Image (spheres, rainbow over the protein chains, first blue to last red):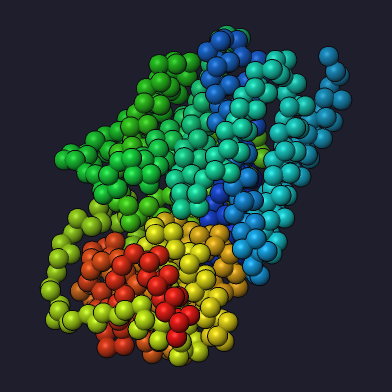
Length: 102
Length: 469
């Protein structure tokens, strides 16, 4: 993990730039009507930090490190779970015809 | 211990699984392009996330699974509860606080990794590691505290007006410089934990100072901007733990935030620089008393009469509608009109709510079919053939001086051309001005009349009169 070469870095930058281009293309097609779910959904995706939190909680040599990683896992999970659940809740409201319960 | 060949094969397998998950995120966003497929998209996105988490757990083989599962279980409970309970009007706050959590997680992951290296003692971090960790802590801390300030403002736990104390800009500049100086120091001594603590504190303060001067009206821009920051935070962590999927996901979220930020700026006719650095609302807006044309007042019965005789009605909802929780009453009114053969549609301005797309969600929650909702470009041509435009709790977004009056602070802002309808009914709370504090000549036009009062009351009374006619 601690060895970090410039060639590694260049690959990550490739990935970053290409993903950004595709991201712009795909997200530009999301209609304004769905921009709030887009935001909460992308928020859930940014919870991918959870993976990083899991990675760093392995092999900690200090209690402090354990605690910090624990808190990181906790907050990242809120992001992931809360983000996807609230997006689902919102998207369920978008209907063409009125629901029966109305 | 496994042999090398097997190790690299399994590493390849893990990478392919991550690639599958990352593709799932793209598909998720792709399916968000239509309300019909969006729900499936979200499901695919969450499935992809689950896959990525499981693969990470298999890959890392954590020896102590207990504390981690506890953290994940607690996080899931907190996430589900807040997601199920939140009111749709409070969605901006929720997004703000979630953005903040993303930023906080970014700071903590970087610090945990630094602690691991620090206490391990066997290896010393490289310069590139220091740079990525610096980036992760700085962006994460700014996102965290900035989002918290936005949350407090939106929740009205602190004043929503712009807060700018003397010398604040200078302090902001100095703190930004300090963040850069800390990068230099960290490259020189990468194992100095104190420097990371200092960096966290400086960047946290910077985040607070960056959002404090931004007023309530500009919150849609700020939330979008912080959304892109949370993407940056994920991206930064990706560089720290060397993970492609984090970098891809971060780029996606960053792109979404940037797109939304630009849209919001355009909708308010402001540049990002202007939002971030210019405190709107503090300017002299008590300009010229206009010719003070008298405003015609409508009773709910007058409004009902107009609606009764109309064949095409366009409703312009504003945030005032949501404040008085009148969405369902509005739907009842629209249902009654539709039952009488009236063509009803809704015109949604991009900043009708408090965040991008907010009004659409608020109306969808009240079971208003989404195929009756139209955005500005789609519907602006329709007003000329509309018999009645009903403006409920909206003001600046229908102010015609944005089109014609070069001296108006709103000039150039794209507006809904509600004034072009044959008749205009305005339902507003009081005689006050809009968010921007600007006079609205629409209200005094010959084809317009105002029903004063709480939006909910006005809608309910109009519906009652309509039924009696």
